[in-house]
Length: 223
Image (cartoon, rainbow, N blue to C red):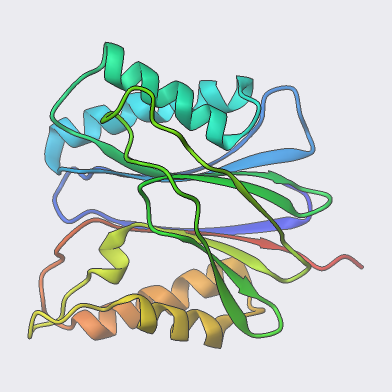
């Protein structure tokens, strides 16, 4: 996508994971793209199969919906009425206007989307909504924010903040905020590398507790 750079990292806790990240253009539009991070409440093959289904559903819904909240509403209804299982899905979905930087965000019980501002601050975008697949008529809120030049959108799963060290201590949101604050204004892949290095340094020799997924989209400064 012209004017934007992207970076991502995925590390499954097992051979087959239940996390998902994706960046995709909206059908029929060259001026907008979607960002998606999701996490199944489970691991292994059942979680991976459900996530593959959810990915396809969210792609189709985002192409045809009025916005990310409407897309989550459509997918949730399908999961409850046609794909009922004992597993559920958290998700953060954004639709971004590439030229203006306007980002529309909706969440299904997921961790907040973070915005690393080029000036050196980190904002958390909170959008209310329950997990997908639990309640048929669940409401999903939508929030908007403007992404300026050199600002970055950061999406992640709880495998990042709930990473544990050898003493079973959690990495936590505060440490993530501090690391992102130090990386503000750097390219997307640089932000990803900075966070991953810090999580690995914190974890040490401890085994991964959960899948780790990180997705960053940075708006580039024009000439």
